[in-house]
Image 1 (tube, rainbow, N blue to C red):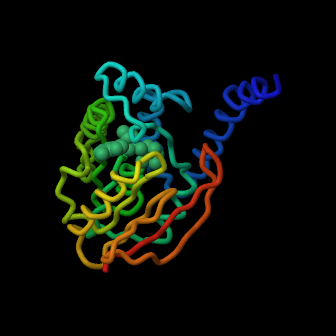
Image 2: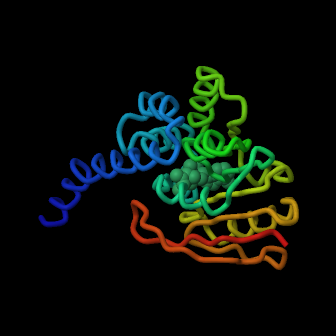
Amino acid sequence: MLGKLGRWLEDRWFAPWERARQQRRLLAYCPSFAPILAQFEAHYPEPGSAGLTSFLERQDRQIEADSLTYGETPFSTWIALLKHWKLSPEDTLIDLGGGSGLFSLLTHTATGANAISIDRIEAFASHGHQLVEQLDIQGVTFVCDDFCHVELSQGTHFYSTMTCFPDDLRAQLSAKLAEAPSGARIATVTFALESPFIHREAHWKHLFPWGWDDIFLHRRV
Ligand SMILES: C[S@@+](CC[C@H](N)C(=O)[O-])C[C@H]1O[C@@H](n2cnc3c(N)ncnc32)[C@H](O)[C@@H]1O
């Protein structure tokens, strides 16, 4: 009974309230993001809308796999990361499993860096293409593919929420990041990368929708 009440309170009250609070923080950090956020909200109006998009496509295409489980990073975590990384227009962020692509859109708007959001869910890429066309955004690309099949050498910064990635996918991704140039910065959620050419520099704890989780900051040696 208490569990059901807790879930009801979380869905009906806490999730929309927390989303509004996160949006205020985002716009305080990057006021010019307002038109993009407005378009984004029109397409994904509820806190669970992007998750539902992913769920329905996985059902339709029968590509259910734990690694494709959808969950979102809070905006405050991305803001902390962008402040720490200090990207410039010469940089390129690659979001490995970028989901709806909001982090790529924010990174480009806030820093001028190019951004590439890669995800296996087609609906994320097709909405992303539509949005960048509508708002005439030049520096953000959406790719629908397995990130293990995409060339990563142009990335200077990488982000991946690896929370639901099994051991073998994490190992593949660690190996794949050998393509990143020396000095590239790599942030991962939940799991650190294990590789002789990736050096772990720092470890943060942040609150995610699923609870407190770890963020590992690495540098390509
Ligand atoms: C937990 S969600 C994170 C979404 C977003 N990056 C965020 O943090 O808000 C993980 C995403 O990775 C995507 N994904 C999982 N495996 C992938 C793969 N091999 N190639 C591309 N995308 C993948 C899933 O479809 C999902 O959208």
